[in-house]
Amino acid sequence: MIKWIRTIFSSKQTKDNTVSMKPEVHEHQKIDTKSMSNKFLIVGLGNIGAEYVNTRHNIGFKILDYFAKKEALSFQTVKLGALAEYKFKGRTFFLLKPNTYMNLSGKAVQYWMEKENIPLENLFVITDDLNLSFGTIRIKPKGSDGGHNGLKNINLILNTNQYTRFRFGISDEFKKGKQVDYVLGDWDDQEKAALPERLEIASEIIKSFGTAGLENTMTAFNGK
Image 1 (tube, rainbow, N blue to C red):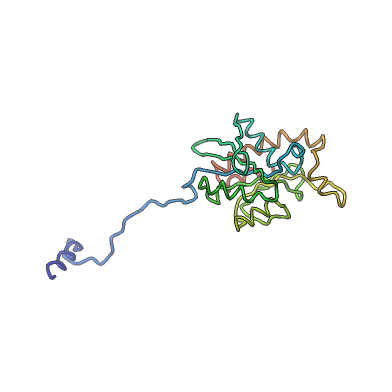
Image 2: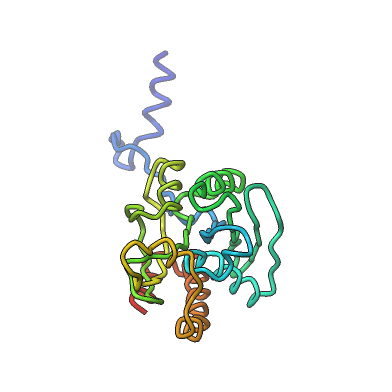
């Protein structure tokens, strides 16, 4: 026993033969847990069906369709939606268009987050917003559903509102009692002419979110 104790303390002795009581410190590189996953789920909200393709409420689908066409991607029919995969600068972006209809979008979001092991901070949801003027961009790290049925269901299924959402303004230029007709109506001629430039910016936002991060993306694009 005495020999064992001497062995322990001898390894802690300094040059002046005194015992150091300081614990050994091993330096470890700090790990940024948010950068551990290079997978991102980009969800465009909308309703399936030909009658909804060009409606204001389907801007989430329209942005992903534009992005896919620009990057020569194709959507595949998968469980609970249509999915396209895009690789860029070491990141993998899963572009998802849920086929559950707007008010059940959370089911598809949860399924693909779990299937691809995508963390909540890498979820990016694109939706329309009546409270913003046409084409206005608002990117936020969290927030209420704002009365949007798609966001409402995602919040319910994920049990949180702490995920990034990209709100695309569609304005509120409708008469009293005509909100549903307006949201599910086609873009007017002036909006159609302006959409391509807005869609191009939206595509850059998607890339920026995965490569430059949320804070830099908000700084660069909010209000554009």
